[in-house]
Image (tube, rainbow over all chains, first blue to last red; front, side, top):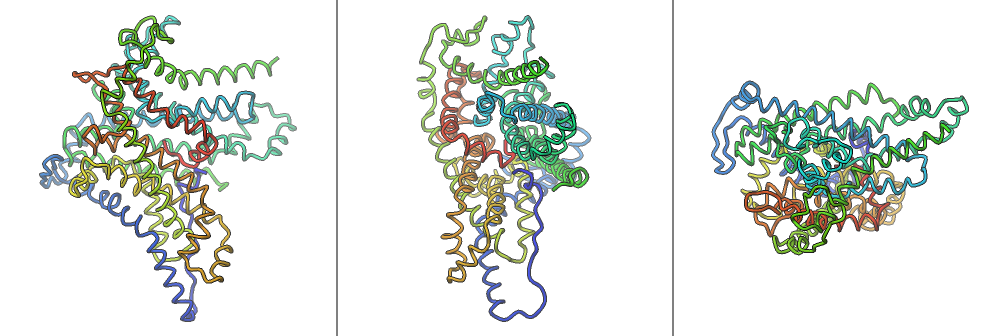
Length: 317
Length: 276
């Protein structure tokens, strides 16, 4: 399951002490060599495309670099100073990233947990509803975003036409600040409801039926049962899903680029989008690298927070 | 009575949730079959007043769309293949072999799981340009295989191999088999289900990816499907809705079919990761 992804399990390593016979030592050396041989292709690629770029991004963030010409000069702390003190769009993007993350987690996790709780006792039609919820999971983000952009057109868009049937005049969704942000959040959240529901379903089906029976015999109502027995039991899974969704929200780019292009006037510009805009549309690679460092720092903070939360709230692992 | 009410409320929830999850597909198909004048007509037509196949034809004349679908398919297949091979090799090493630095390396690998792909994009762009891989498919293969997708594979494979009884290998070793032969003849056959899972995850990641093609590919015959979908625009950059929806509908067909055929396998594979 998803749970262990975030925790490397420590391994008992190496044998200790006494002078091993030569054969054993040779054997161990061979084993180590085989190990290095087997991981070398991936380790090389990882170094080249992840580790080196990660160092490079920090170095670049202290330069003014033009992405097209590659011309570069030292900038000291200029980029960071500009970012933190002179760039309201950056702060707007930080705020949008926060709102986006919280909104995405609340809607996505709320709906998928709700769906899983309804489906896990396998009511008639459960399989059908799960399949319907999975259609969007196997659709690409780009396709999902484009269809919704079309649905959210102000005049003649599907959503507003549906709303007009019940007498509501919808806004021009993607061109007004608040509706636009709400729209991209909801669209992103809906996309993976089916996937998260499946993760929750697996956790729910791991609850021993005796536990539930015992609570029922004690006269607990269905609602109390869910609140006091079921939800605490799946808390570890919930925590992991929340964190994965949270961390994933920092990489959201497709919906923003395709539905609003960050607009109107950066109302939907998350940091990942702002980074892209600075680097690949304005070619300010140095400045964009400083944004990347901030984004990376925020991700690290989240990871640290999850270690802490896991230690504090989840004892049963 | 109250049970009936509860049940009614639950189905109401299910139906209410299904509307935004299913309606987009219906609307997409319906719009793909509409005349340009009917696409944004009011009142809306769920069933087109007049069905036209022009949009679907235009999808393939407007851009080399068949070629672009092929690009996506072959790139995703290669990404899946490479990810499987590498995760088997590294996963086995991390699960079974002792070597100095193993845990540090594994921890480093894991850290890439959390890393937003945007963070390393700028240096990778310069690197690919310097290596002569700008405007080729190489970055679309290398970045996922060595980045988060590949690492997910290693992680899942390591877990899986750790659950295989070590006695099997000990028996093979007593028979005089070396590590590499054990990997090939004992472990590989046992890891087939996990290789399937990793393959599906990697394939889907590549099939979906939009940012990498956007950054690395310029020529339209090299586009992958997600990027191609955005290019059905008129001269002033506005989308040609009917054609775009037709292309989008066509683009969802391969995976929807695969899902209907292998529903259980795909569901379970995806549930093993938190990817998108």
